[in-house]
Image (cartoon, rainbow, N blue to C red; front, side):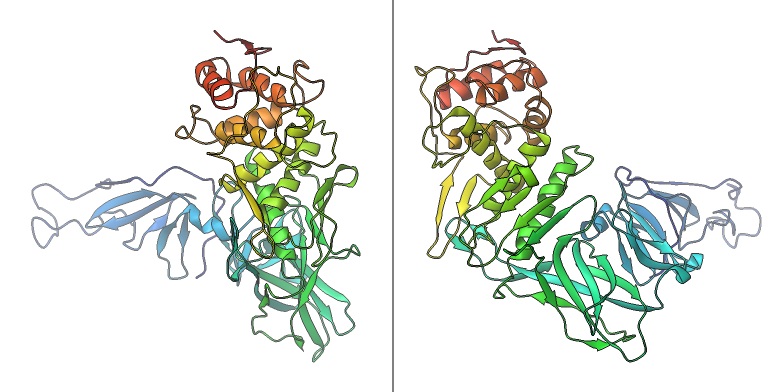
Length: 493
């Protein structure tokens, strides 16, 4: 379907109304009407029954002699037949920050739905660069040949003690390249969020070429790479084909492949970066993730070079990957004075408890599931962090050693709606403390450095004292942590 070029903004819900157009028929049935109740021949003043777009988001059509208007939730589009219709914001689900090409139809979702017919403007839909992505461009600016297809990988859904069966999913934002017979790169693009890609290239007639997908997100909105132990991107290639062939070139990385989980690691980075963007982070610092099947490195984050290392059996451990990405977020967008070292959830230095517990909160908040899960053959281990309480001691003081699990539990309780706990919170409210207050605390209280006391201080600085009663019930009643409720945000009554 070819669509008229539109520049769109996201609007509210649809609203319909009907009214007579100016110059409607006489009430007495005069004129050329064949019956007193028939509408005049031009009752809609030229508005067609098949509809027309009057703006980026407004559609009008002639229905039973009256003009009907509709405000589209996403966009008003016009097909090649001339008929107009509304599309919803749901079309953005498979697009991503770099857009998508379907033939010469361009779809963008930069704050709202934008759909355009490049061919109608004498252009073609093609990939431009890693900041803009797909756009309508002059045909002469891209290669004469074109290849398109879909790249996917097999996910295995993670639950406590269970790794689900392989399930094909799109390789969102994955890097795709076209190589010639000598492995020289002819073109490189990114896949849309539905896994589709389009590449334009030049090659001699009859030359053999092949499509290869890599474990990298090239978009400046999602700068992430997954490397093997030697520092190379993981790659998966398709069979060679003749240059100029038009058949779709689809790729599927099986979970059974030795590098199959690399794309799961990348997908977690994409998820985390989208979550950061939704929290208001405008510019993202690249993250470099290392994983190789069979490696025995343990899982950890290294702030000196923004590198995240996952153990060889953690390829499908979404929570572990997101926890380590939580350390990346602390390093770049929040703060932590984590002294490091071994930790197992036992009461520890409150700075370590903050560093590890708040990183776990990131993983729980992104997944909206209160489980830390580390899967391995035989089931691995997991900790439930909603109903289970790793309490402190009301007699221990605010600088006492505490469990990292308690920090994650308490933060998750300020994130989820009231039910299991007294606080009716949200990710946005807790995230505001994590991203806005923690990097610049007003005072150093409790143990010197960033710990749970700074988070609680920040809660009242950012949100005021209206939640004093429910926070006291949560902090003192549920977690037995002797916070004094006398921080820089004010003294709770």
